[in-house]
Structure formats: C-alpha cells, structure tokens
Image 1 (cartoon, each protein chain N blue to C red):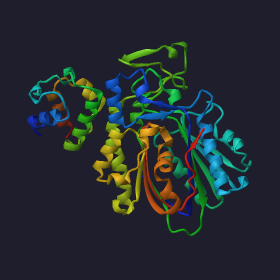
Image 2 (cartoon, rainbow over the protein chains, first blue to last red; image 1 turned 120 degrees about the vertical axis):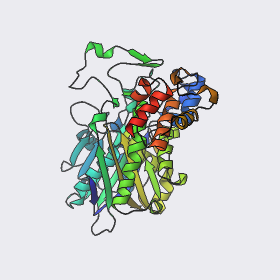
Image 3 (spheres, rainbow over the protein chains, first blue to last red; image 1 turned 90 degrees about the vertical axis):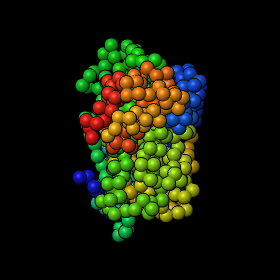
Image 4 (cartoon, each protein chain N blue to C red; image 1 turned 120 degrees about the horizontal axis):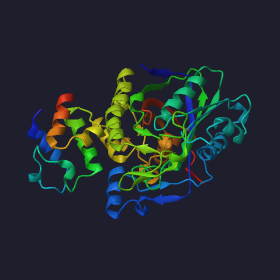
Length: 352
Length: 76
C-alpha cells in the first residue's frame, strides 16, 4: 500500500500562470448552440485559456516560478531541486527540467527531473519532491506542473477540445526541521485502463508514420488523427466517480482524519458533473470544494495548484489551512494527499 | 435486484421522454433524448443505486434496458 507520511517539509508558496488568450466554448464551431449549452451545463466549462503556437508548458511554468522566486526572496543558488511534471514537454529528447533550470538561472548543483503524468501528476510529483527534501540535504525545491494539452487535441474533436485548457504552475517546497505537520499521501495506479485516455501513435511502441496524420471520424464532430488525444468519456467517468472518493476516504481512514477537520478539498478539475458526483458521494459541503473549471477547463496536471491560486488565494495568504487534494485520470493513475499551509506566498494569477 | 425498479431508475435520468416510453424492452439508444450526457447519468445511477461500475463498452453493447439490467445484475 502506498500510504506515505513525509515529515520536515513545508509548502512555502504556490503560483499559477495562464495564457491571456480566452476561447469561449459557445464560440466553437464543432458544438451546435444546443450542444454548447448542454456541454457548459454538464462539464461546467464556459471558457478556457489557449496557449499560442510558440508558447510551451515550460514557458507557463517559467513565469509562475520566476514570480514565486522573487516574491519569496529566495536566492537562486539556494534552490537545489526542480521537478517538472507534464505530458507536453518541449522535446521528446532532451528532458525539459534542465531547460527550465537554465531559464530560471538556477545553479548546476540543482537536481532536475521530468515526470510524465497528467491529471494525477501534481499529487505524485508533490510526493516525490517532498520525499527528496525531507532528507534535509536539499533545503529548497520547485515543483513545476503544467500542460498545454490543447496542443494534443484536434480542434474538430468535440469530445476533447472544448473540455481542456492550458496552464502552468509553480509550488515552492522547503525543508523545515521539527515541524509537527506532515504531508500524507495515498498513491495508486492501474495500467489496465491505459487505453481510456491516450495518444495512439508517435511514441516508440507505435511510431509516427505518414498514415498517423490521416484524419478519421468515429462519430459526428469527432475528427482526429492518431497523433492526437482521445478520451473515452464514459470510462473516465466510471473510473473517476468510483476511484477518487475511495482514494480520499482511504487516506482519511488510514491517518484517522475527519472530513470536518479539512478546510478545503481541492479536486482535479475533470468536469463539473463528475466532480459534483464525487463531492456528493463523500458528503462534502459544496463550499469546501473550490472549482476553477468554469474559466479554465481541465488543465491536466495544473488543475489543483491553479484552483488553489484562483479560488483560495486570500485564505492561503492569511490563514492556516488543512488541505485535501486528489488527482485522477490518464494512466490510469490517481492519488490523494493531505497537508497544511501556513500563510504561504501566493501571487495573483499571472497572465501572459 | 428488481427489473421494474431498475427501469424506473433508468427513466429518471431522462427529462423530456415520457415515462411510458420506458419498458424493459426499450431500445434506449434509439430514444430521441439519448445522448452521451445521459449515458453518464446512467453510469452514475448504477454506481449509486447498485454499487456496480459499468463501462462505456457495456452501454454500447447493451441494446435494451433489460440487457443493461442483466449486465449490472451479473456484476453484483
């Protein structure tokens, strides 16, 4: 069982960055007027931010991190660890995290690591970076989580394109000795569901060929090629409403935490219909589950920090909070975490 | 598990279709109101009422409400 309790680590700050460009779901030609109303009512997505052609996930994370470093007043040579979680890296080779290290002007003594996970990525990567820093040798680290997932979607695929948005984030983590609070995790995965959300070709199992670019339609207004993201909405839904609540409940039970003692449950923003099902199933009051999906859509691994910045910023700045977060999706991979924040640094949402 | 209750629970997920349109033999994908969003409501209803996880393929392979009932019943 991957229940993990990590001491001597605190979250010092969270920031997020989105592209300036807004795209309204009601303006998309692939949805009829009635369809777009239905879509908005069900998924809760009204508009999303779309990265320009020359703007990568790393760029969005870079701006979030740069602001965080300045606001915290961290010297750059005190940052000894940078983890970048994304499924839309700059290149297939090399990794993007060393590029980010250079963009941010961090020192050569900084450990860098890419993690390829989507919706569960923030929870998993928070675990990895906390574990590294918990040893006490690395004092400060940056967790950058971001995706420009719209770049993988066909604009003519109504099952993916209206749902997703682009965003980046930075979370600053610090070693702190003899602190009583711990970061708690419950991490899970199931590769049997690897075909539920996937890009079929362009990797090394199924290499890209000329045929990979052929657009094909599996139903009305779903037109895509084999290098683009596909998603079985029904299977994702079944997975989300059964696994996410269980994963959260297991964590609460294992560490004997009551729902009442949690200030906020920040869930991965999959779609509002699914998130509401999860919330009601767990009997969590609506005011404890912040949502940002209305304005930003599903931004893959960035949803949790983005939602914390846009919906909880004021409380993060001035209150001690106990958080429960849960990410679930592509892999299949899912996980939950519980941690405290105490007056952390949280700059306003950055738009570039 | 009771077929008539299942049929009623199934019908509850629709807003416009007359209740009389739903019998165990109803071919639900031919109903005018049927949509992928209703499919999600059905999946959620089955999860909630029967504690069974069904997949997209189950919804696609079943034709009548009774077919789906049988799938759920066999997983209980």
